[in-house]
Image (cartoon, rainbow over all chains, first blue to last red; front, side, top):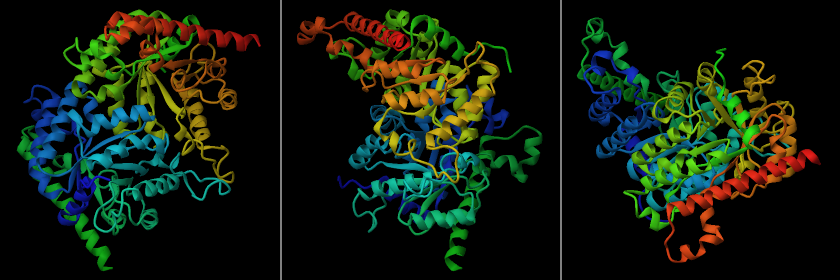
Length: 312
Length: 312
């Protein structure tokens, strides 16, 4: 295995140092006030301006940023240029960028996806993957991970209600040592994680999992089942996950807790902006300041919840 | 429900009329001889030239084309422009284009993916989806399907060895009427399919499934379990699936059988080109003619296998 430092190790260190907040740049043009949109050549350019200002003003509160590619694909080719610029802006700010792409396909296709998102225009530091088609679909990404230090987060337990449909199904006790579908994913990922050497001593495995923060009891169970895996934790903030549950999921190995709309759309609930909102005179500075305050508060809330948990 | 004709109905009719062949445009630059690549400004432009010539020369043998987006993402922003042009070229040729994107995400994100791939630069007629995160993740796509006549193919049983890891897991008989994970997906999709009215009389449901052709016994079982679902059948040709198995999967409801590399790379095994291959003097016309012959042969093989099956 190459001695190149893993991006995931860097992310783990940043989470310890700065707190576990991951800011999600799921920047839909509808999250930007019309009076600001109007000042740009296109909705995509407004998104880029918002992202750039946001990264500059909130990077000090965040361990990393996560960019949800769907919102950029929805803006077509121009949107993907903005996606590319957004990834570059985060990387220039010196913190890791997670590309939330949730790809998963047969090996030859997965090779193409790995090239697409670990190099070139869309180079990210860490990406998310969907394990449904089986563990062989992860292999081309793992090859990159070993060679370049990139990282992957594999979907384990998502934060949407439909999680019960497939991930949560109970398995036949005669045919499986695992209780549920997601346990098979988890055990598989633990095995794969272990291939990347003695990361537990000081390095963090470059292979982590996505675990939504939606229920306290399940959060404790899943953290104690996978004590050594680093988690990407969505569902905090606008999706209803609370700081205490996120803190439970962090555990010893740690994780990064994503908030997207709670920060991007903070201006919509900012009482100090109500007059400007009524008169449609918000500026980019206004909404970025709201977002930065929300990022600071989220960071403080998560750090506080972690301390309370450690103290209790 | 809107009375707009479904793209899937059109595809089903084309399959009956022209045979079930779907040509896969998984056009990696490595599938093009270096002497042809060299004539273009970039690998992406060579891919576009090959795709355009191929569509023009093979459209008469195909019911549809399937474009695997991963190969275009791997070429960055320019690659996605070529992807967009490829989709437009197929649609201009008057036959449906399937975007093989295998997306799957929480509802808000799925809405963005639906906009991305059912409208704008990346508008396709039918797309593939990954059901792992649950049935709620399909809802935004179904809304589009109802309103615009677009179609979806949901992954049911894929053709890679890793299919055994998750899709093929046996469920707890005490908690599920379904035997395996993929049966839960199949039953769910059958229910969803049924919402789109009396399609069985003459229309084809706009909601189909992906079923790889890898094993004769399983092919018969899965076709008899879902007699009314239209199938997208990958794995024929270079992945090892044979025409007889594909024909078994077609059944009464039908399906479309994809071949990608078997057609795109036909020139590599074309004895009539061996001299030109040795002297590195292949032309675009040469490789397109090989591909067109391979498409004709695949179509004939599939139609023959279907007739043999019906006769026996």
